[in-house]
Amino acid sequence: MVRSMQHAMLLIILVSLTVVQALSVVNLGESTWEVTNGNGSVTTTTKLPAYPLEALRSDGIISNPLYRYGEIESRWVALDHWTFSLNFSGSTPSVQQLLQEKQVLLKFGGIDTFATVTLNGQKILE
Image 1 (tube, helix red, strand yellow):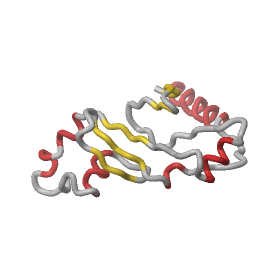
Image 2: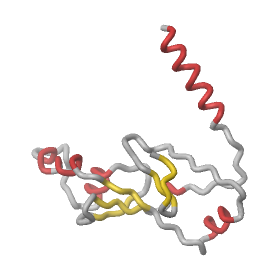
Image 3: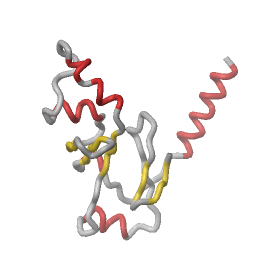
Image 4: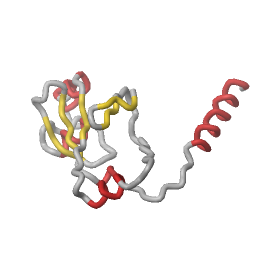
């Protein structure tokens, strides 16, 4: 009971610390992201939130994993490493808006597994 209360208090503190009033918000989830496997042999695109299995299925690369033997046929997806990447040009209005800001808050609401996040080749989260 005490342990769960400590976790609840920590959660409340973390949530209260993340409340930031932003002057401008750019929703990168509306952009088209590229999804690539570890050796680069499989690539598709998707919008966020997404996970590799659904992105591959919607693009026709794999069949429905819930139908017949689809789970066995698509098992390789879970055994591979997947990269979600987005390149945005400095000429788009949203990027120009970000470049004018002194400080930018990056909020990740969809990372639900092990991840390394890089920005312009520099690791910012692991």
